[in-house]
Structure formats: C-alpha cells, structure tokens
Image (cartoon, rainbow, N blue to C red; front, side):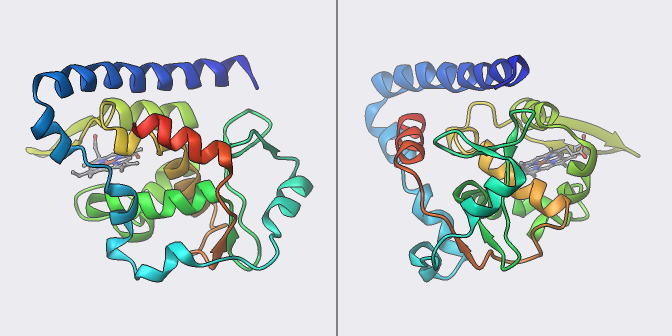
Length: 212
Ligand code: HEC
C-alpha cells in the first residue's frame, strides 16, 4: 500500500465517519423519520432495474483470481489493487468480473446512470464517464464524486451533485470506480457481466460496517 493510497483511504474514511456522526445525531433527533428514510433497502433494490435473477447468478469455477494473479494484482481481503494501490477491476475474456466491479456495475446503474447514461456512455446532460476515466485518476474521481462539480455552459448550469455524505454512494465508491474504469479501457463491454466472484467475508463486513 502506498502512502498516497493510505491517505486516500483515510480521507474517504473521514468522510464516511463524519457522515456516521451526523447520522447518529439525526437518528437521535428524529428516529422514526430517519429509520424510514435510511432503511437499508438499496442493496437489493439496486437490482430493481435489472432482472431479479442476477444477484443469484453463480459463477463456474472462478478464473477471476487466476487472472488477477497473472496480472500481478494484490487482493487486500476486499478487492484487488494495482501496483499504485488503487482499486483494480479484473475482467476475464468471458466477462467474469471480481466482486467489486460487479457491485460497481449495479451501483452505477442505480445512482449514476440517470445522468451519465447507461454503460457510462454519457447523456445530453452529463459527460461520458467511460471517457473521463481514460485520463482522470483515482483521487480526482473520488474528490469529484464527494465534492461535486458545476459548470455554466452558455447560460445553462450543469451540476454534478456532491455525494460525500451519501453512504449509499460513498460506501461503494471504489466499486463504482472499478466498474467505470473497466468501461474506460473497454475491458468491460456494454451490458451486464456474465458472472462474478463471490463476495469475501471481509468485504461483506466492510459493507455492513460502512452502511450501518
Ligand atoms: C443529477 C445528475 C448527476 C448524477 C446523479 C451524477 N452525476 Fe456526475 N456529473 C453530472 C454533471 C452534470 C457533470 C458535469 C459537471 C460539470 O461539467 O462541471 C458530472 C460530472 C461528473 C464527473 C466529472 C467528469 C469529468 O469528465 O470531469 C464524475 C467523475 C462524475 N460526475 C461521477 C459521477 C458518479 C460516479 C455518479 C454516481 C455515483 C454521478 N456522477 C452521478 C451529473 C450527475
């Protein structure tokens, strides 16, 4: 793990922690309302735009970790990382993907698709992230999603919301990053992956801890 990566991870944790603290206050002051709003249904509702069966799809014997090994990616217990320590997708020739990329595919289509278009191809309103990530690095991506961005183009405001306090986004942002990154290199074609690795116990725990 590089110092830069640790810094990035810490920054992200800080954001999530800040949010957790605020949420605790919110829960205390308004338990009933928050409970109904914050009901942790997104994980499975995220599939609502997709046929129900995808979450249950199981992979044949898993070639993903094999490929990751060949490419020299490290598995940190939750996801693969490249030599810079950044989250890394693994996509096989048959479009089997690591868990993070799979999760990112689902989350992207739940949270970003509405503006950035299906398959990260962009829309009249927001840029094609498939192209943005050809050059945008990991920390800029995280900072943009967390802090938002806006631009006035010929009198029209184009607004990227800031998601820094939205746990349904920030808890999965590395997953979303790996999915879009895989789209940006064409490792991942349009559409849904053919299969996925299973989630690791550590990843499940990290998700649960983060989303509360
Ligand atoms: C409400 C619409 C909307 C949603 C939802 C949205 N975005 Fe955006 N996003 C935009 C707009 C508009 C821009 C361009 C802003 C600008 O030009 O300054 C943008 C810009 C970006 C950029 C910078 C792209 C570049 O080339 O500079 C990134 C990265 C990004 N969005 C990621 C995401 C991710 C990831 C999600 C889902 C978690 C998401 N956005 C959801 C509207 C949206």
